[in-house]
Length: 226
Image (cartoon, rainbow, N blue to C red; front, top):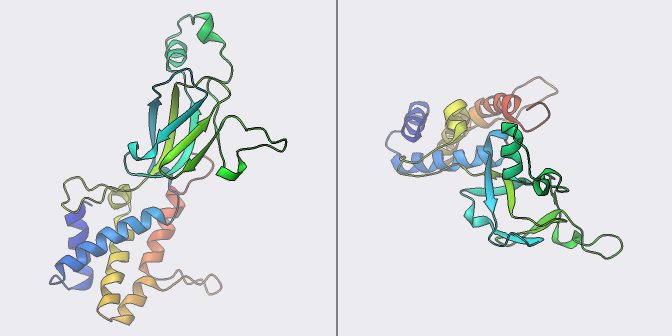
């Protein structure tokens, strides 16, 4: 569903088409909520980063340059020349054929863990400091593939609004937004119908929102096999 379709679906559930601005806000908030409640594999975007100083071992990336950035998933050293030659079956020049650690994944650490047990700076790591991503490589680093979790595009005009959850599992958003409207107008019983928590001991799957989230998690959670 697009933004207008989500809003229309919430009107159907609440029977309150008079709550125009409240419903739009509830839909946008609910879209953000269902995306950020977990780490979904379809939220991962990938970007090739080319650093200006190709001979440096220490590189800094402004994470605000990554559209809709939420959190780093992985960083991998990249050698596009070697990759292209391998894919086409061409002969690599010696300097590209056997460079060490050219495709290594880097390890994310907290800023307090940049030193090893001997007090030396660890290599092939990255850490966040404010809006900067600091990368320390054991080799000269010009290219890196950055995988990151992205926020949905919450364009309130609807023109650029995008959420794969809204597209594939729209009722997780619709039912969360519906519960928000019922909560605001004091309809406690209606709110509970959507937001009643599951009870594993009794087999109660919970309210409508939790049922939709169970389906979403079953099909979209990050884990083995994808």
